Length: 130
Image (tube, rainbow, N blue to C red):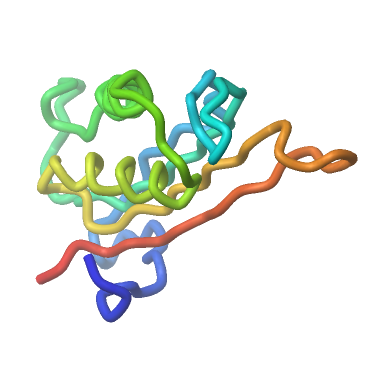
C-alpha cells in the first residue's frame, strides 16, 4: 500500500457492519534493529472487520485472532528486521490475507529502545484498497 492509500481507521459501527478483532500487548523476542540483537517487542493489532454474517458460534465465520498471532510469530521467526516500521507493515499486510479485514492498526514497541523510557516504536494504520 502506498502513502496515498493511508486513511483513518474506521471504528466499530453497527450501521456499517463492522466489528473489531484485536490483540493487546503481545510480547515476543524479535531480531530487530540495526544492531541485529534479539530484544523484546510489544505488538498491538486492531482490525476492523466485516460483521455481515451470522457467526453461529463457529470459528470459521470470524477473523481468528489466533491466526493473526501465528502470522506475527511467523514473520518474526523468518529472521532479522531492521526497522519497527517494517515489522508493522509486514504484520498489516498479513492481516489483509483475510478478505474480511477492512482496516488495520498495528503498533510495534521496542521495550529496551531508549534509556528511561518504557518503549519506543511506531503505530501505523492501513485500509484495504478498493
